[in-house]
Amino acid sequence: MKKSLLYLIAVALIVVGCSSNKNTNPSIKDDAQNDVTNTTTYLNEEDYMGEEQEIVQVLNRYLTIFAENNVTAYGELYVDPKSMENHDDLGKEVIEITNLDFNPDVSDLDVGANDKVVEVSKKQKVPRGDSNIVEDKQMFCFTETNEGWKINWISD
Picture 1 (cartoon, rainbow, N blue to C red):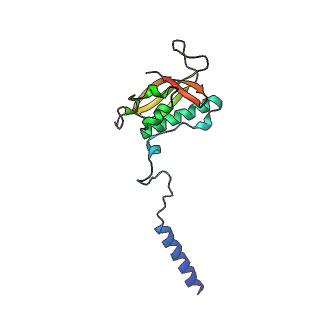
Picture 2 (tube, rainbow, N blue to C red):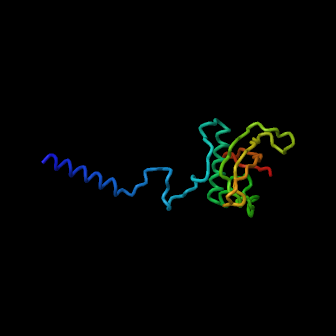
């Protein structure tokens, strides 16, 4: 009787476990799930503090917007969102920011007294969906607003 009961419990556990449709491996995504994180590498916000951490959060949002090709949200990153209407930046796919320099030489740039400039090294696919990955550096100028840090301009 005990053996039969144990056998029945074991079989029931195996059947329940094998019939589970739940994906327990976070690195494997169902087709219905958004696979943005499969191609985008985000900055670790915990590696930064204060203003730098807040700027890194904006840069991670920037990466998400490029991954999602979200034109509306792209403008919201900027101090003047209307200036980004009909802009073709989203024709590329930014997949990773590899290095940040929070103290670049800005002597020849138009920078306000309270602006923060960050030199950003990134990997991207130009045009979007291309198999070749291009490395690029750009200066991002951030301005603190009532809504937090916003991008004032990005150098070419």
